[in-house]
Image 1 (cartoon, helix red, strand yellow):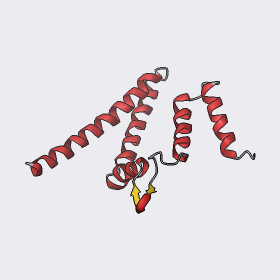
Image 2 (tube, helix red, strand yellow):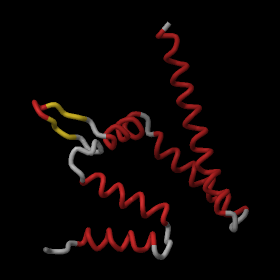
Image 3 (spheres, helix red, strand yellow):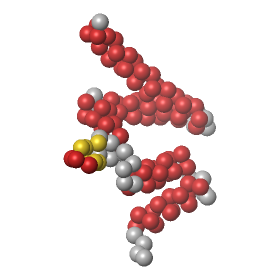
Image 4 (cartoon, helix red, strand yellow):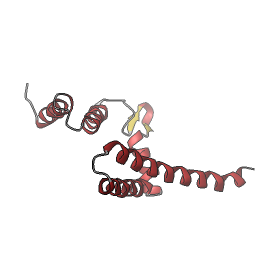
Length: 126
């Protein structure tokens, strides 16, 4: 049985995340996502089912909604990063506050945009 680079990289990522506690909140979800993408019929990727029916996966849906249609995901990531950088400059010791604030700002902007879209659709539904 041959060992390829994906096995070594995956094992080393799990080792670093769990044993050495090096960015476990980043490495573990990345490796879990890599495993999930490679499972057949997981619903993550587009798949052709019986009778030529194509099921759209979650990754394709996220791309169509968040990047292709509105380009909101890169904007939210950029705003979150700017707020996080401001937090680092203000208090470099408070890591929890920096991450919470950047996620909160991005979430607030996404909520306002979603509310605006819903309010623009409501008159057509009545």
